[in-house]
Image (cartoon, rainbow over all chains, first blue to last red; front, side, top):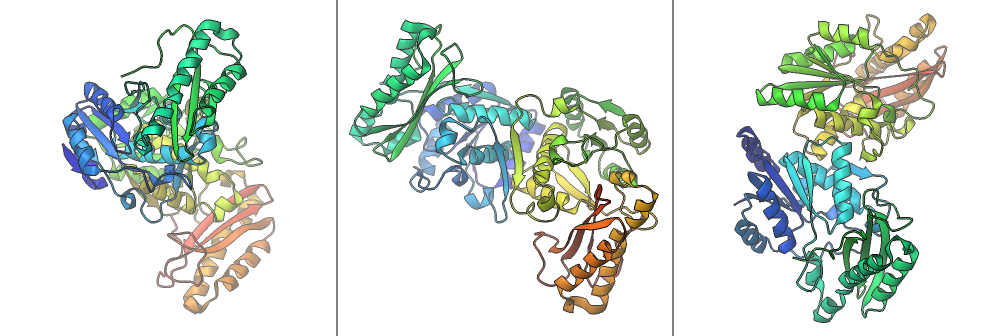
Length: 293
Length: 293
């Protein structure tokens, strides 16, 4: 595996791969790899000849008071994990190479970013869309893979690709979970043992919602279900709801009633310090609980 | 020359050209070709194996009350002119193919768009940057050519290319003028005979400014010169200044004093109906007047 930190070196290598007819798959990440990331890399490896993973803690997608300064980072650790997973190139640029002096361009999406995390994290998806547009132009991949845990992010990227005519295919990878159901996240590393236990309320409340829908079907009012889930989460020690929403899985607009395209998305703050997200389709026809690894 | 109106057909053709190792040059236009456009196409032909010209009257770069509905358009006429000039492919998509239902992505630049036309035409450069980003992804050119008459547009595109890491080279083409000095523009077609005569004040006032700088050098205060040029234009029948500015040619920020990087840029409204722009470097070392064809 090759570690590349400069844009020019990257574009040189990927241009050569393209010229050889290699299919290039990209997995954009902020590092501190867990099995979720590694699954995306494996998926990329199954679809592409060359797997590029970017590792960049993107400052412009963090708001004031968010965890930019404490976000976990260990390049050596991540290099070993990526190499073991068969990654060909790890791109880990410095902030000054991605945002040199004078940088001023922003890619923004108007509708998909209004609700959910976009409402709590002003400017977050502008930062995501902008850095991903840059990565697409730098790596020029044939395909790119994003996790479904960041469901709104995946929807935003898909729409950006369509709107700006990026010539590549986007794949979502199902949420990868710990054995007890907690969705894997680099931010889980912020949790102490007690908080880790309480954090399970994200998963259990999604499970509860799916069971209720299975029982009551679409007769269940949206407001009733979201209110119940809010109560479960807020009743969990150290946990407070940021949002609990039932939305259409395509438009991300609030569902009027529960139907097969309804997605429950939630964000929870633990000890007002660690913010975790999770989501699941509520499809009454879909028997399975959110995918577990 | 091939006329292409669908995105898929375009990407198919340019991918084949790329695979054959052809260098692709793009000239984005809104059509109603004049010698200015044709010179850009000729320049593209001198640098590329395949010349793609896009013809798209981009609705999102027009503001309310601007001339979107009256903008001149004649595809047959433009096809003949482009073909004669050696263009390989004319891409003339419909609005619904460029902005399908659900379109919501915007590319914007924060600093370069604040002054000059950006100040008079709110949202104009968002529209320009967004459509050009799309064209770059659709055509995947090795180079693209823009006229220097739209000086701020050229600066915005150069910065966007750098900021978003588009893998292509941007060239500016000097302003092409009528024999009496009027900068060529599709909007000149709006002028009646009398207005056409008055419109010459853009050129003559730039000439005047260059002469004053040549005489007085950098001792000439910026405010004095811009005030004199405003007076010349506003004293011309049917003409009214939109802006007269002296700015740094790189940052487009107002110059504090006149020096070799100073550019005079102006916009004039004729009969409050036709808005024309022009610009010239004021470089006291640079003897020549703005380039004439």
